[in-house]
Image 1 (cartoon, helix red, strand yellow):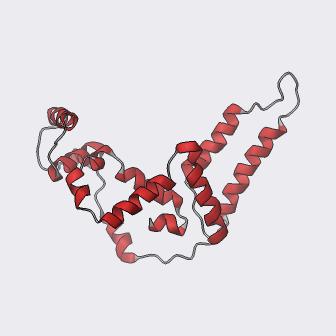
Image 2: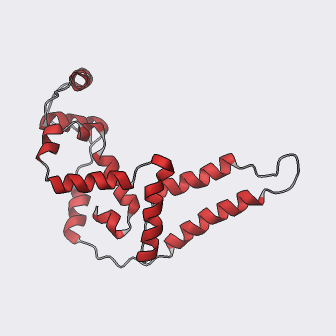
Length: 182
């Protein structure tokens, strides 16, 4: 939520994507222990970053943030998708002629100007050396490693979870976290 409030939408979406991985969402008992206020913040973030109506809530928040902050970091993947969609859907030439489709050129220009505007923003955030050290020294797990760690935290409860766990064990026998998980 802090990233979102600061206008760092790319990090907010990355954190949200991580929290919505199946190996995390299956941890119901752990989620039930979380502070209700934190869960409300998570639900608000999910709503703001929802892909519904072509990310309408996010696009509104982005416009608002651009007016309030000198530094805004958009959700980069969506910006690239918008450019790609324009390139794929709009024809370069006006149909049936050799004339250039200036509507496509204008739309691409609009996307690129928007991107450039965000590049020019001044970010005066202070770095946190302790957080940097923590992030740089943290182990990065593979998808299998994350699943294994998830099952160590909370045993499978649902039928589907039990099937996934059984398949996982057949694929990767239970041992301590070995190097194939990193």
